Length: 460
Image (cartoon, rainbow, N blue to C red; front, side):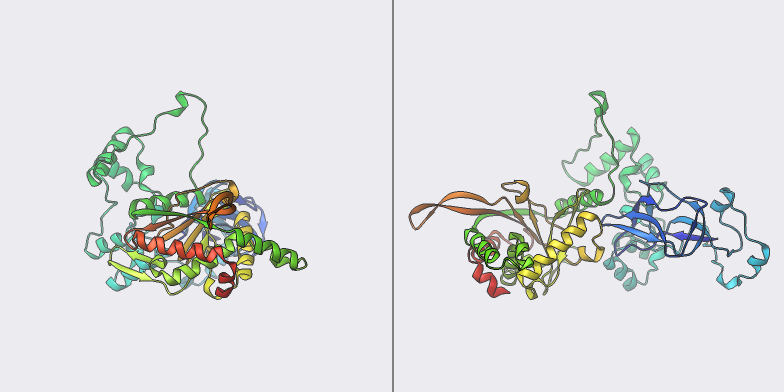
């Protein structure tokens, strides 16, 4: 019997939602054949069977959320350990013959973990910085009790463990709330433990004591006023929620707004499309690709917007590379594909990447690697008709640019009223890292680049 555990799905991914099983219990499956589809907070992936055999047990159904390292399937591969897994026995799958068990060397049998200790065979969800801190402090991160969302080990968990408080639980109020949190299985966030009125009251009191003027109230029962439908907050949508709350809670947002005249750009695009009808790449020359190139030039002139702030070390990290992300609406939630090294790519190359990665994102097939390492993000609501927006910074980046809808508007040029194509821009930035004057200069340079496509061609 082989217990197949949900494998590591990428750095920082601690859980996944089962979308579909490709087999049923009792069916035969070949090695590397599709076993199940799992959706993480980044993308949907198909996981193959690591071994061939007969499927004995499937853990979970479509819609269930499982942790990385949890057993999701038991496959009867013709081999046997010391005993068949309990789940397989419960399902009526007989243990392998004794001769087969004796043929398996004892050295290959997994030794059970001591009672109450973490299972070392299970990957521990933790950020790279947290793992580095554990190494620096000489802490075995596998032994650290986790308090973060989805069973993630946080830097504070490592510090508490290093200080000797190895029994420390999630730092919330005592009483019913603390007991509920302590009883939670790994992979559940603290809010899920707040079920009854007493627990919620204690949790709210603790939050109010921590943050002045914060008052939490439970949601009313909306079903008393009419029919409702309940949908679990999962996968990409839950990741977006966490990112937005983190950003708005930690970052002092400031917004700078201005308009860019993109009339010349539109005329340039039309001329190129007409002159190169047989060139399929010209059709992909979107406004976003020009904006990405203009933003890259602006970041070189204003490096404060290509940084991240480490609030614990009180250090500013200046990034000497330019990886620009763009928000993509997938229908299941917002993802941010990243175009790497935009300072070394032409506008045509950037356009091709935008088209390819946006298509993969809509299909749920964008690799997690293509959503990591961004230094600045652009979000564009213009195609949907939005005239302006106040975007939320993609933490831990320093700024985000919001694009509205291009509209024809009357403007004054050389004392004359003329009709021009105007693009509304909003730069939301971290006021800890930059000031209003910095934002005005950055957006001003951006407007100048967009007004003259020839300047952007020089950037290529």
